[in-house]
Image 1 (cartoon, rainbow, N blue to C red):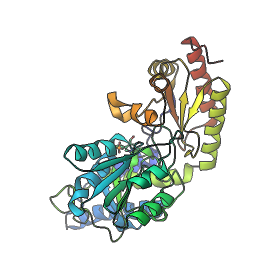
Image 2: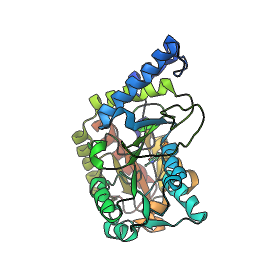
Image 3: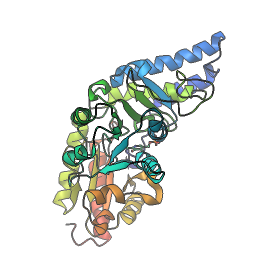
Image 4: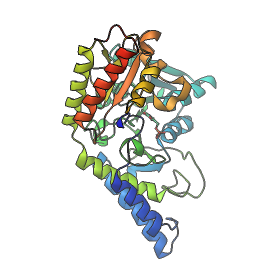
Length: 374
Ligand code: PLP
């Protein structure tokens, strides 16, 4: 199988599997126990935290481990109202794990404002700033969109938001951005940043929330007081070790320039065969949203799968709600949205495989009767 659905999840690095199994075999003790074996298990966590912090450009004590980025994102909205009152601003490009919690607050009467996207897929900066005022308490801006790969300039947006509302906290969903934009977390200027390990070659079920030094957040899960009293629950020691191993492996294997050049080559190929690329400006280089005219993405995805190519369409984790909200916010019509496939690359994507997959997809589109694909 040629796997090009890395924005949905990635293959787990062998070293991440070994790191997890070693902890499960040798350091299975409760990391909060005070006897020596427990202390050693705890050391595995703290070692992993430092490794990840060094790689992402944060201090170790700014990283809180969670079960996934969905949890990290929900935390921001569940606890946001506890520490500050005021309106909330999000963008129309948010993942469901930001959008839905924000909508829940809105349905309970909170003032939640949604900044539109430009046709390029970035948040419309002027519109965003017109929604932010001195009463704004929280702004959530996706870093890299999971459907298009479009990158918001978080550093600039944070500065502009804080100039309007110094009291506002800024959160960014960095699931598709962590380690992929080359920007250290501390330089982004955000107060909170969510990330997920399974997009970086680690197993599913482990994520993190970055909380900038000096920023207070109420605990989301209360109980035994783990994770500096902020996120109770016995830590997932094996997967935390796997997360750190994956971050190291990703650092060694990843070549952003190569991936970005490969994406550009793929896009050129699709365009030369009558397709359109959605969200091609300011792209992270890891995701290509390809509009294949007059072909239903769902059918094309299945035909490609039968031919040995795994691709995505819309947002893989949104079930039946997938795809439509973000692409329609960019101005795509329903029939265009239904024709959008997503190819997403990772550190281990080989050029020959990706180009072969592109041929297979175009061939499949022709067989499905797309007159526009040449
Ligand atoms: N945010 C974005 C941008 C995503 O792409 C995803 C998953 O695809 C998530 C959040 C949710 O991450 P997790 O699977 O760790 O809950």
